[in-house]
Image (tube, rainbow, N blue to C red; front, side, top):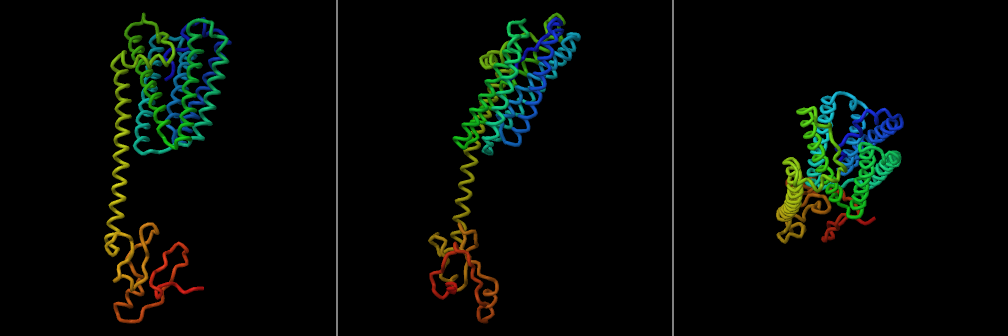
Length: 338
């Protein structure tokens, strides 16, 4: 997800007032958009927005580490990076599990919310990239910040495309697939940061969080890096296959249950042909017709039931004025004409 390198570790770079001002602005933009996308993703039901929020969290953490602890001892920088990596991995796991849960329940997110917030996030990343563009020719750390902001826009474009897919297909799968991919990248980045931080804590001679380039380098390294990366990729495949399989079984089971309940109702209250028509023995009473009309078949009105059992004349029928109610075939049972 987010870039795994710190924005800057050099004291000379941090002492540049223009650079520090740019980092503060970038920190404010990324922190604000992280909150916006998390809230919009939860309220709008979009897992892709929640996954894209990890981008802003990771970048904001990079800027905060650079401004807050980069000038401190190397052990403190490693601890801060460890906290960042753990948080990023936990958020990535949460989004991945949420995507699997959404696949099982087939909840279609709000495409309008996804599109509007996705475009706003894209504009925010482009503003940060333009602001940091003049630092692209500086040292490696300055250049890494600009590259990260530029590449983060790719994730925003993916969210906008997912919103178009949700709107056009009326399906949650475009949102879930984008969210799952970005969540796996978040897990990969978090594990990579924690591994580098552990190495930093073991040896003070190891540079803290060396430059690793764009976050999208993790895609090609998932299967050929450490076991955590392979586990993340396999976990994604497993979740997608499980979601597809269980979703199909759930829909099939629901359809069978509906058919069984309809058949049982027809057999209980019909004359045997399953067409929801009351039997001849039941036609002595006004009936509510069931099934699609939402009534109960074969249940007479209680006053007429008591009268028939006692031998007294039947009470007048309170006919419904519902125009959708079926008209009895027997003229004696039809409602009076106005």
